[in-house]
Length: 388
Ligand SMILES: NC(=O)c1ccc[n+]([C@@H]2O[C@H](COP(=O)([O-])OP(=O)(O)OC[C@H]3O[C@@H](n4cnc5c(N)ncnc54)[C@H](OP(=O)(O)O)[C@@H]3O)[C@@H](O)[C@H]2O)c1
Image (cartoon, rainbow, N blue to C red):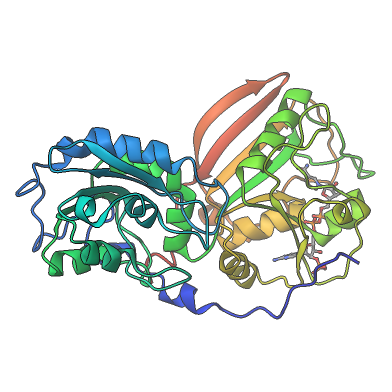
């Protein structure tokens, strides 16, 4: 048996509370609320703080890339615009970036200072207190941030600061900030991890030969890329049949077989109890979601702080994710071999007639050794939760 059998799945309260981005009082990319902060009035405009925001983004990258919390950085300026403190968030349960920076200042230095922070200061008491309150108590003059906080629970710090008479400017270099927190941000908006489905197939769309043999269809270059992609995700998942058929290790490795620095959490989805000798040896605890309800499975993973999920198959599970609309990105590795037969890379997608087809947009086509890698995304992404 796999070590971990999950507790009963419950819909986390947080998922139900995730805010619709389009109805937020502030625009997510500009952070401005028309009533309260015409950009550039008292604070000189976004461009004045662009350089400092890029420094804050750089600092944020000192934080962990795979954590329940986003990576956040902060730069503090004195009245002359000189940097007097720098901070960043080191992961859930540790002080937020603003508090880290504040801790380096005397009360006199903090009073009247400008805080340049990548994400809107939080307004929420979790394992740490609301950053907005700490900044108000410290008597800062101005807060400049890159992106608004997308969560209902954490959001609203900017409005609280404004109400306390602090100058607030949002939407400074939002693309630079988004490049670091995109999975976390989108996951918070969707109430589920961002999902990437990957498969490897022959040129004629088969995942395996008729006897089920499928190992080494793809080139060494493709296999190396797959391991790098695994390491970019918080979690990786397969269906129970793949565990039973392949005894996969689900680790991210170098071509020599050494473990890469980040190991995604291995997740098995399916009702059957399964054994997996190699999975048992995985450096991280295996999560077995004993359900076929992908909506519940994704909510459970989201509640565990997982923001990105790499779906490795097999064909049944990959197809179920696509049919349910829970796909944000596709990686398709195509090897120059023909296999014929019944072992298709995808099974039923619920498409019975051409008008039901699922259109995708191809983002790139790459040669990897003798293979092709097609990167694509659904033309009509599932925005059900965003639209809620
Ligand atoms: N070419 C590739 O990229 C690739 C990648 C991975 C695997 N493979 C190959 O694929 C083969 C296994 O593929 P497979 O399609 O038979 O199995 P699979 O997709 O690995 O697992 C299928 C199982 O997933 C569970 N499941 C969970 N949610 C489901 C849902 N919403 N709908 C349907 N099933 C759901 C069910 O298990 P329960 O009955 O337990 O509920 C189902 O029987 C292996 O031979 C493996 O080598 C190929």
